[in-house]
Image (cartoon, one colour):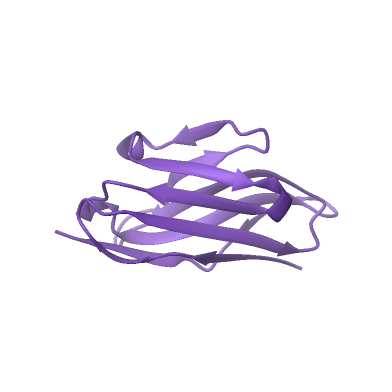
Amino acid sequence: QVQLVESGGGLVQAGGSLRLSCAASGNIFSINLMGWYRQAPGNERELVAAITAAGATNYANSVKGRFTISRDNAKNAVYLQMNSLKPEDTAFYYCHANILFRSWLDYWGQGTQVTVSS
């Protein structure tokens, strides 16, 4: 059994910062891609940022230059530093990981709410 547990969401004013954390635990042999997705009401879930085990990153155009994704492979953890937050960043943020135990599977966290007030 694998679990992803997120923390760090909350309410912040526009221009402020938040840091999301996500830790994977359970039966884990290896983790490939880790990332963050978000979903606002009425919208589809979208990729925010992703990072490979080697540290290569990919960002949505809307967050480039404001968000930074990082990971700690020893802790099976991924982080999202969000700066210069805008009201349009308001969404439920989900952690994702591609994890190998007996086979490669995708796992999701329960999500954490980020609300940016104007």
